[in-house]
Image (spheres, rainbow, N blue to C red):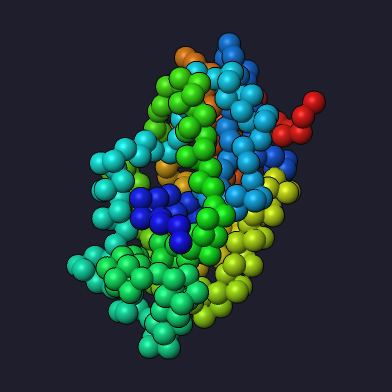
Length: 295
């Protein structure tokens, strides 16, 4: 069984979006140019973890990273940040999932984790049952994938280190935690109930997400699909995505004006009226899709 304790902070990427009608070209990699930039920068929308047998970093992405000097992500997760976030995603006041699920749902959850995924009893009691519901939801997907899992940002960060790129975080761990705390517990619980009661459909939803991302490169569908993991929490979508992109914009502009920068951020940050793509276009930059097919 793949241990995911140290990676638990990465799971939140599946959270919160709204149904989007934006007419956006199908692409996950975008080039930012014009408006006085001497060299282009790139934005790569990612899904935090994917099946290893369905995804590898595209050669075109590697090529564009080679052309950049800075690697920018949502947050720089050092050991202190990981520890801080792992504490934040636990249910407050030493609570546990029993406080939110019915006896039948708890039995279903235990069967799923202990029998299907071979989680040890002490792991269930001390760790999984203490996670806030939305984190528990995404943890079940990671457990389902087991060893067939690849953490995309980690792969990209490894490439960036080999390229000796400078690392920059657009936000801070405190901002991440503050945004996460805005996710209404009621919406989290409904998402957890859906997963426990209909786990096969939950996995079907995830497989659709993978297809939309890997095969179709349709970020609008990707963002719409993430909606199912959050019980359509508009408050969380606003705080976790929209407000943060607006806050990041001056830093994004500051980076691309100085050095060619490769941004690797969650795919939902690229979709909608309040998104990296649209905000940069409104600032006068040319933001165009990059094909992942080899020339």
